[in-house]
Picture 1: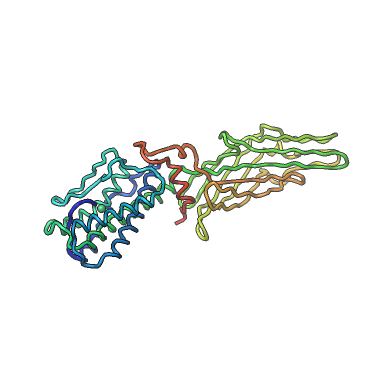
Picture 2: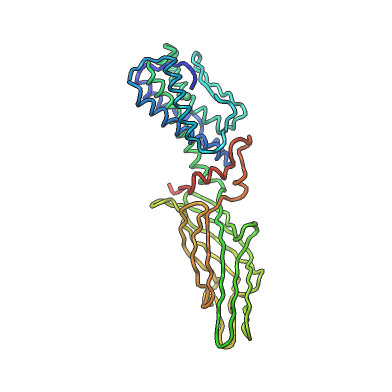
Length: 364
Ligand SMILES: [Zn+2]
């Protein structure tokens, strides 16, 4: 970014666009997501800012250091103003450079992650290609617009590398869980007898509900979770219910991240209460309320769509006459990602980036 380099003609930029992607895809890890997102947002802001400078610079404007500094100041202001709030992955204000005499790339920020080094390398490779094809003879840009264009190309290459890594990680790292909370209402009445109560299901997490960790393969999501039924019913007279607190409930999820119309999580949630314990749920003289006596598994399956992180979808499920469950489910960032930072401890936790990104699209 801060060097005198040369690019003599438009043909050089055609050459540059074929020299991208020197950094290998696959170098970034699940814990790098926040740094990746911060750098994507910075690159986007830089591309926009340099593009504005490019559009307001007449083609063929002579390159001067004063012109260069003016562009850099304007870009820095625009980039700072566009901050996404995620922490900076670099501790050096100029983390990398390409030398103008030897065309050598230097990564100054030695504590940067391999992922961020690969990102910088991708950017600097654009300058290196320009250097090897042009600067060796001229050592300076012919025009101010040529300098600006080269930075646009550098950030575009870096942006493209990071987007590739982001897509790969979003759709393969164990970032997500489906949090399922169920609230059961029992309200039975017959000839002077009545049973009323409420129930819920809780898992091992301190939060209410059962977290089902999701595994993503391609666009397909699946997972299993289990919880314990807490049931409190009180009856009058002879009425009684046979589901007690402490019964284990298992949940399984099958679905996909889809688009269109909007990115959403479409899934089937299957719950399996113990058949033995639920066959005759509640009884009162002359009446037995049962759950799905004909089904061998007593499984309940329903489909839902969720369009955002942390946005519950809910569905009422009539379990039996007089007994209704409202099942709420939401896509959440699974532990430990809300607190996890990259290996060098810099930047923001992964969860902060995932909330900025929202629902991934793994269907393509
Ligand atoms: Zn640059």
